[in-house]
Image 1 (cartoon, rainbow, N blue to C red):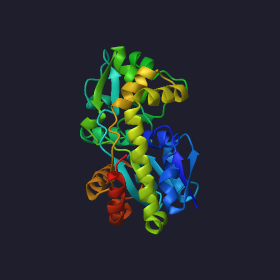
Image 2: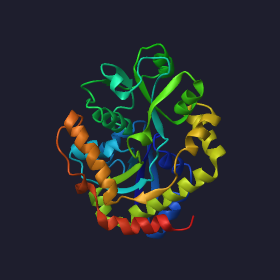
Image 3: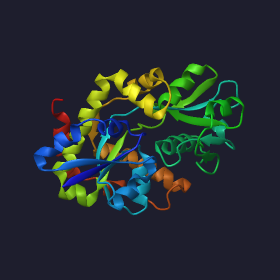
Length: 301
């Protein structure tokens, strides 16, 4: 049978796996083959799993929560190690925003529905403010220069990642109000449909083994990985190399500790109205997957 993985540029492990032979190599002993479905918006991952377009996907912390809130029966398969330097909330160095509380009444540009929503919602919650109530969260529009908009006071804040963050850090006229690791663990999160996980756990483990190998390749070939990203996604090779060097390139099983992190996020999202019902995140945890996934991740590359 063919197993289809969803791929988008915001998940680096899947992004590089789609360019390497490891998925078919790991699936072959199980009599399976792999395929990749490319799409632009990682927030669609839950819906693509639910309708059968893909069998396995990966995002940041927020999309699986919103997918569960939408009623999709999903299971967490694996997570990355924390990514403390993956992103940052930037403000103008010369502007009036000096603390998170100063964002009140302002506009923050971010990937709405991505891990960036988790970052902003938790940061605001810590100051007694609410996402959607005390700030206006907007998606970036194509072609907009968010650094310029910050400098000129059009927006109060911008959550940046990847090569854009590396370039912004070099500019000298923007300031990091918070870095990701100050607020959330910010893991890559890999998940699948419950029926797929329960019926084919060995396939799920094989996929995580392929992802582990792709991560090892990216860590060992930083110049090549950066050149691929720069050529396809924009930005400079140097900035991509800086951004990719900040990632841990290490995966772990989805454990109860991770579920607790997600439950905290889900509770905040429910409080501020980002999701419309309370969730029990543990319903998406399958403890029986932990051992086979751990074994796949422990194999020598």
